[in-house]
Length: 332
Ligand SMILES: [Zn+2]
Image (cartoon, rainbow, N blue to C red; front, side, top):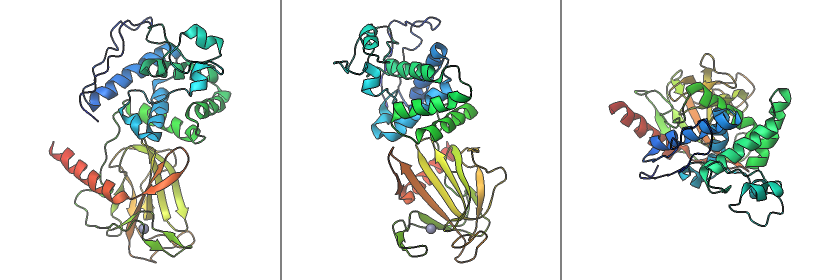
């Protein structure tokens, strides 16, 4: 995160209970950015009764789809026709009365007289208001309504499955600073990392190797690399016993050929970096239970969802970075 981001959010506060100036934020580093975001989410919850965890989740999902979103205080925004209204000649900043006239959902939260799609506060409050309207008072229909609202905002049918899980991660830890990484094996493990991403593979049809192989003794603990939730657990023909974990950057971490799973690892389980999820084995390449067709190793894959497709990235540089990150954290 670039240092020295200075964000002056608000001159005159316009929302009731919030003391004026409480959101006048100078974000100097990553920690301050999280703090500034949290203040916005909490203020938007107070106004709209949409939980801050859900707002944080929608915002983080939008951020994960666009790399430049990292630098923005608020990444989520209503699509222009939804913000300004269909037929509104102005897609930019406008007063609420004009936006209302065209059926737009843009809101002026910072009290400057204009609903501005480029202002982080107006942007977030417009999203929160829209979610509140669509979700009504909740209940069983609330979930479907949330799904279609998320699809309208993010333009991505998958958001419906992922965003509520992001919200559960935020609810579990009660903070936004959840991007720390560790190496996938415990410190001191004996292992050999084979950086063989992209190598040809022939079992199960012609394909390339979408990951790296980390050779380690049978039974070595395998750890979650970062915060996330378990999306998949069980057997597949190639991967054997495998676990799939999605993190808050929308990376899918795929751990395969395990000899077994750690206790409590099931779909929906929320994990923190370093949590043991399973154990190195040699399962796979056949029907459930097949093992020993190759030496024990962890196959580790890393996939990224960009809103349209999920593509494999080479995990090796990430793993090296996380190894360094973990060592640095220890000596601090
Ligand atoms: Zn492999």
